[in-house]
Amino acid sequence: MLHRYNEGKTIDAVLRLIENREQQRRAPDGRSPDDLMDPDPHRRVDYVCSVGECLYAFEHTGIEPFHDFIQRGIHNQALFSAVVNHFDNTRSNGEFWELYVPFEASASVKTVQVKRIGAALIAWIEQYAAAVPVVIYGDRFRDVLAQTVAGIPFPFSLHRFSFDSIHFPTKRSPLSGRFTMKYVAPDDIEAGRENRLQKACEDKFHKLATWKRREGARTILVLEENDISLTNHQLVADAMVHAEARVVTDPPPDEVFLVSTSIPDMWHVTCLRREGKNYYDDGERFHEFQPSALMKLTKR
Image (cartoon, rainbow, N blue to C red; front, top):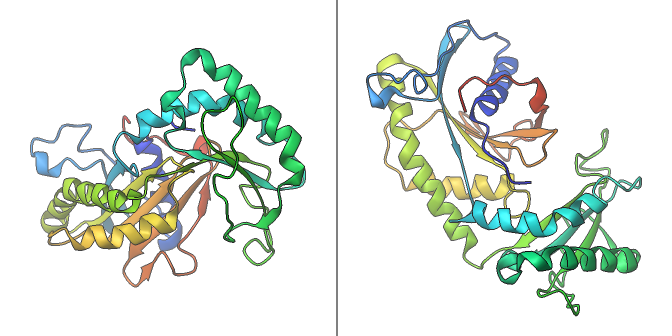
């Protein structure tokens, strides 16, 4: 589900991860130079505080896979929300279901058609879901948009996934029992993702560098994504490597984190890079946080 970004709470999630890693608690000196309108615009990072003897400076930014993604997503949400609500968390077998549609699916749908198309999709899934083969989550499959049905003005496919014991040996996957939409993106989406991440770096790096040079702070960039359909941690991690390489900033941020907030009751924090570690190292991915337990450290 699309929603506003969560600057203050995502920074708190990353800060809690740092506290746990360093085995030190934050000091009571936390403040938001941006909220306080610091007289020097170059110092207006989103949050600053100490953990142990080290000062940390945080900048947050929301990321989209391409331009106008959120507005298009709002239209898609209106079209498919009834379908998601009908099937989400209704199965006890632990399977994860995804309905694949073109990202532009809602472009030609008029408001008066929304309920009828949603009902047609629900009826098709109820009738034919049992015939859809179950595959292990992460395996490749064919026929992404294989179905065309009279009365539904776009192609689609339903996919059913189970979870193996290798990746989830001791706990249930957070996707078990869920039903989500998967939007098939334009062919150039990854180039667009890199360009938007590069713009985020250009906008944010210089303020963090100011705190590094003047205050000796350890600098943290917090990226937030709330898109379960076209974005995942690995795509962002790989794109970020190329985006950062195009930005000339001395020094760059010490650490970069990605917070995924697309699942309303469970967020996931991944470290994309820090000294000696990156996304592909064990222990850096998928740290879980309940948003209701997090503090809103800034006004946003």
